[in-house]
Image (cartoon, rainbow, N blue to C red; front, top):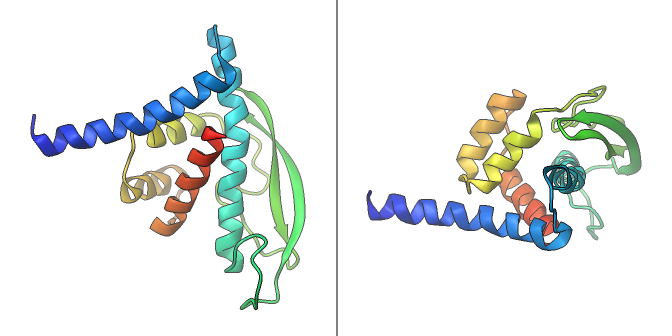
Length: 164
């Protein structure tokens, strides 16, 4: 095995190990059911982080960002969506905008079942995939393009959520 490939695998395992360690320390699961509960508790904030980043991209500015904005459209609270996952029912807060033009892609409007997506998302982060690989996988799964900057922001938020 080449040195570059081995170094890449070690980086991938480090990211996955860091997320797994954070889950184990926080939830201390003893059974498969407890592990599934821990993973379900993490997915809600992961989906919400992805939706927040989509809203930031849609509006062109971050949440609580001060200063002049390039749009008159603003955030307008949240709607609450219950979705079915591989780990059970989950409530997710979906950001709204005043103009009603925000069309979330991570959990499209009127979507009630996202089972199967969680495993793919966890797999991407645990494997330490590159931004390009994650973007390609998201396009394959969801059928939409996502920028490398958005992937970077999502990755940072998810890892921060897992560490918290």
